Image (cartoon, rainbow, N blue to C red; front, side, top):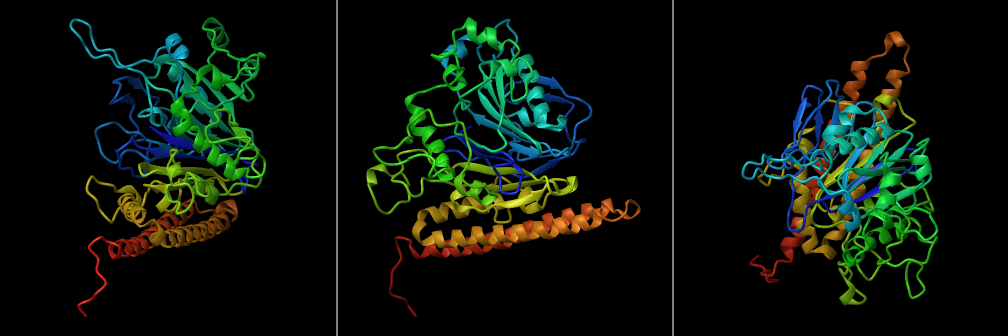
Length: 501
C-alpha cells in the first residue's frame, strides 16, 4: 500500500520514548475501513492461511496479547497494520517499497500460481496482509522481530517489497525486503529520525557488522555473495549504498515519493540545509535525501501528527494554497492524502512502569482534518467508538466520522480550517491531561508495599482512562462535525442571501 513512515529514536524524542509511526493509505480511488482491536492469545490462530497468497503457516502455541488495526470488513484478510504486544514491543507493517529489476531477476517474487491442468496450485509468499499477525505475538524485543520475520521470509518468501519497523524501549530497527527472499535491517541511531516514503530508504550499510557482530546491521546470511554474483553494488568507492544497489530511481519516485521525504526533512531540519530557491542543497525531486538526520529540536507527538498530515504547507506545492504559482499547487503527492486509512504512532515510554509504558496514538481518514487519540495497550478492552466500524456510514464510529469531516472540510478548506485546528488542539490537550492523571494514579498504586499492590486496580485505571479518552474523542468529534457541516452547508451552490423570515 502507498504509505509514509516516520521513526524517532529515543534521544531524538521529547521524552526519551522510542516512537514509530505510519500512515496506512489505500490505493488510488479506494478506502479501506479500519478499526482498533486487541487480540487475545485465545484468538490468535495456530494455523494461519493467507487470503491473498494461500500460504499456510503453523504458528507457535505461546502468543502474547497484542493490539492491531485490522481491516474492519472481511474479504482480503486481516491486514493488522500496527500494534504493540504485552511485552511492550511495537511493530508497524508495512511501507510498500520497490526493488529494481536486477534484484527481481536474481531473486524473483514468490507469487501465487493457480492450479492449471495437472499442475496443482502453488501458494505465494507472505505480504502486508500477514506480517503483523505472524510476527508481533511472538517477539520480546525489536531485534527479535527482525529475526523472526527474516526466518519467515527465507522459508516462505514474499510476493511484494516491504519496509517494516520494530521498536522496544531501547531500540528501533528498520527492515527492508529485497526480491523474494532477501532482506536487510538497520538499527535507527538513538539521536536521529528516519523518513520513509514508499522507497528503499537505507543509504549506507555495514556488511561486516551485519554478517558479524550484528550490532547495528543485520541481513540475509548470503548477502555478500548475492551482491557479488549479481553485480548489485553500484558504489564507485566500495561503500555499499542499499538504496542504489537494491532500490529504484525512476521518474515516478520524483513525483510520488521523494517530495514527501523532502517535506519531512525540511520540517525537522529547517536550518541544517537550504531547501528552497535556486541554490537549494536539496530539492523535492532529489533522490539522495538522507535516510536519517539529527533533528534541530526534540520531536513531539504533535510534530509526528503534523508532518504525517503534511500537504506541503509553506511551499508552492500546497494544494490548498491561495497565493503563488497556481500551476505548482498539487504538483507532488502529499503525505496527508484523502485515502489514508489510519495513522498509528506507537510510543514506548521509559519513565513509567511497564504496565503503562506503551501508548498507541491512533486516528482514521485524511490526517489534514482529523485528530489523534492515545490508547493504553496493556488491556483487553477497546472502547466501542474505536472498535466498531461497519460497512455502512455511521456517526457512532470514529472511522466514519473522520471520513465525513474530511470530505466536508476539504470542500470548504478556508472556512473550515479554524474549526479543525481548534478540534485538534482541544482533543490532544485533553488526551495529555488524561494520560498524565492516569500515569500518576498507576504510580501511586504500584509504589505501595508489595503486600498492598493492586494489579486489578491498575487494570481498572487503564480501562477507565481508555474509556474517558474515547468519550472525550466522541464529544470533540461530534462538535466539530456539526461546525464543519454548517460551514459547508452555508456555501452550497444553491444558497441564497434573502431569507423568508
